[in-house]
Image (cartoon, rainbow, N blue to C red):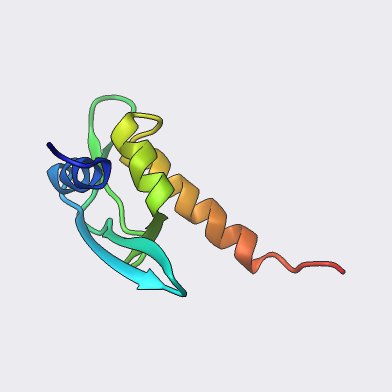
Length: 92
């Protein structure tokens, strides 16, 4: 039986994304190469997205992807939002 992480990795690979696991500070993360990701646009044409070399997803995000909570495009949006939040200055 396939685990949720294996399901998520298979879904991403089917979209042309490479996925590599790694551990940072004791937490599991997944590097997702979206450079080959092709997203549908309105009007029926496709666009190839390139947001840099890698996106990161937490184990929970990968499991939610497998559960259908969101798809690869939404996973990428979560990464972009997380990056923006991390760059925002924090006030004491």
